[in-house]
Length: 219
Figure (cartoon, helix red, strand yellow):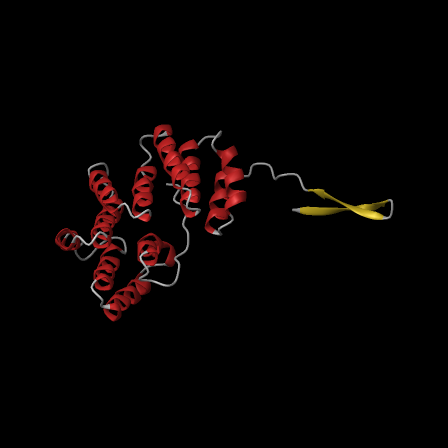
């Protein structure tokens, strides 16, 4: 941000950079920039955040930015570094599997989602992993295992997993109208931020036109 010094020098007003606000959390600001798709400022802030109290979260968010930019090697390296910085912080492992999925590495993504199910007892995380398995199977044209994965996402789910799994199955089988009804129902129950992760693979596979919002996951 710039402010203008209220005096003239040589007939011109000089704009001087405003000093940074003390106490600002660079990770929080970077997360906001990420969600607003201001990736370069976010990366600059994360370079500082990595040195502070939550390096794993900063490294994980940096990986998510690289993933959005299609910089796969950098993304994977960041997720690995985040896991090494804090092995108890689960999102980097999950995001690593997401990166495999986005690259079309269906089998690798599915195998990692399955392995990660044994590493978390958090219900919402487990629902997301099961959904990831379904998407990997559908995208990989593995009909038998896709049907099994769908059967493991039973109603009700704490997250939007049930509704989006039904929509994904319908899309994959040419039932667009039914899929859109499932999505419409989900939108009545959950916020866009709550459905963004589930919607992203549907968009990437060409089943949804609207690109879902980005959500920084710092917990």
